[in-house]
Length: 290
Image (cartoon, rainbow, N blue to C red; front, side, top):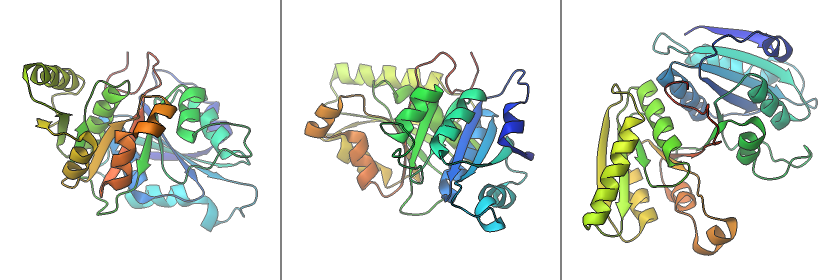
């Protein structure tokens, strides 16, 4: 893998002919190696380009300790097993999330990978969840990573599928991650019963999901009958390094009253959980550009 280092202004001024799939990994002062590996493997999986945006505020001293997080990551993690190109951008800013959104907008990023170090929005003049703001303002798809509480490797990926708005993106992200990490991906559907209608529905979901992935991705499918969907996914997640799920599509009020399967899995699973949300545009993240 090749990588280049530049300033934000220089990078934004570059001409952009036939851009590849771009994955943005912003570093907000601190980082997690697993999230970086996730972004890198996703970029590898689609043959894309990884933008590592190393952000620091004016309160931080620009020293080798505070400004080279991204550089150290690239130097330590890049080797001949990775095929995606990588660009490191180092930028001082008092509004890190706005700067990340600006980069995503101007460089036509298809997917942003965020983790728990993403800053709160207070003081930046923005309202709402950081991932929501990135998706809406930058018009890109977003992955939010909750860290593994077990090991940090990626050798197996579980993708629970349903009919939600963001489920299709979960399949693509899970497939890209698995392909980049040379790991298998299991598509998993849970229904309360396995009558004829439920079986036919699951079969259609699996067929549609498989069609979104290249043949090179190793895929297996499993339809489970269980009374509690969240509990079934949590139990199954224990056998995988990563679970990839779509963001809940129900209203915030209903989610507060009834709970969310995704939230329960994120809170209780022992593995890493990736929560994805699709922007809804025509040029979203995928294995092929439209």
